[in-house]
View: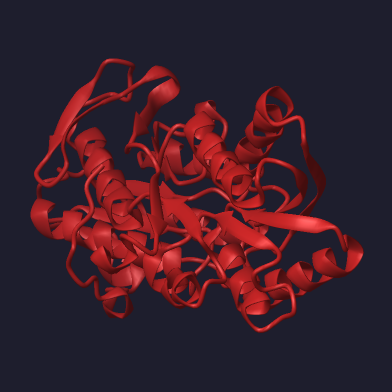
Length: 335
């Protein structure tokens, strides 16, 4: 996995009206007329802002139009109208981070029936609901690195809690289950006392952090596998009596977490490059639209920036391994 050590202008995302960008399904992914809809879990999320920058970079390379749309709240019900609109407009590809593995499948199947290629990224649906899933990293690897970090930070023993996104988020639930397995197998002295949900909402995640610390006075660490959650938890800890006493790790972006690493609230966290993830999702969608791949295991396609990728089992394309950020390296990255 590669990181660009250059400033990514997250605020400068290109959002174009669906009505202006849509075109008939089945177009050539290399033509200016091809239209892709980019549907994150919710708008206003720094993680997805950055992934959309990568999506637009791929669009520029390929000569396609990528339109970001999405709900304000991260819920499957809120995503369905956007999927339906994409189907009605006949876009060539729909690229979606699913808020639920099954709840949006009916809408996705209708879009697929209208000729739209379906690519999930970041958070998957059931495999039969899409053509490809562009995964940020192997789920077991993501779970393992988070448990390793919190174990290192609390000395391998004590109570921890998990602050997740929504209770239905496919990726979060997979990681949490694998984290439980990792704890049971390798860390007998660490007790997972609770898992709470901030719904990828800053204030709710902030409040859930406060509630955890009040409910578990012996708590030694919090793992938050969501960029919104870890930033909100860090903000709470940074001005509380628990700073330096309760460790925090999980998945975050360097720009969100920089001040909390600098002030000692957070020692280390992990992530992949969400810019690369958005870029790869659009490249994969274009390969489908062009007919370069069918989404079958063993299919290969090549990207200008990241090189060659191979489709794995169940139509999964893997971006790479998670990367750890800490005081020694965080200033090398800007996203």
